[in-house]
Image (cartoon, rainbow, N blue to C red; front, side, top):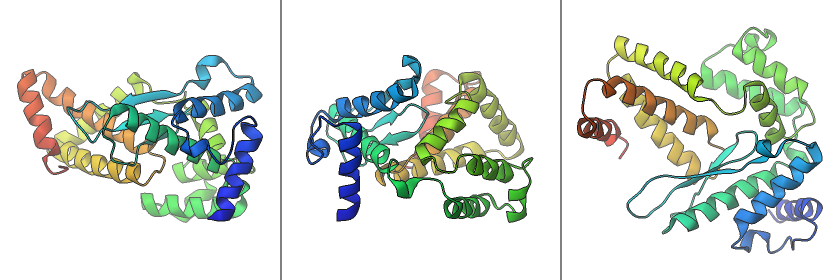
Length: 255
């Protein structure tokens, strides 16, 4: 752990030379430090200003604990993992998690290697109930993932995510979300109640991953797509108040 902290401080000294590495994670202005870190990275790549934007999102809540998400350039997303009593505190905590992950991904151990690719492909096969033989077939999702990893050996995982985001037009746009929501609506017609069930699972997974301080873009996108599908199903059939009741029922199992 001490060696990892020392390595992170070396990264800070290299990327943010005017900052005291020992005080960065204690600084209450961590939001500004995160912005400065990514601006420094983007300058080296000479990208457009719009491509280096950090986006914050706070979940609507009448009271604590508050939840905040931060999306980094390239699409990686993180959230606060502590129980926060104010939106500002949640925002700072989310920024701190994103900064730690950003710095950690600058370490040599986080670069894509042959061993890393082998482990990642095996995990992908297990999580999708796929076949390891598909890794050699670029026409399959596992094969495409394997090929992209092989093409980015030496890069960090955040850099790899930026590559994926470039080819997928960064984050999912509204048109793509609508198409994916439509797919779920078709599944709902075949298996009534499946969207509510999947939404409960997605919310639970999103909370678990957020509290663990891990990257949560996939889980957040899944939750938003399922919520969109559920809203489209009932938007033409019920009033706004009834829709709120339906959403409450859908989330009952999650609560």
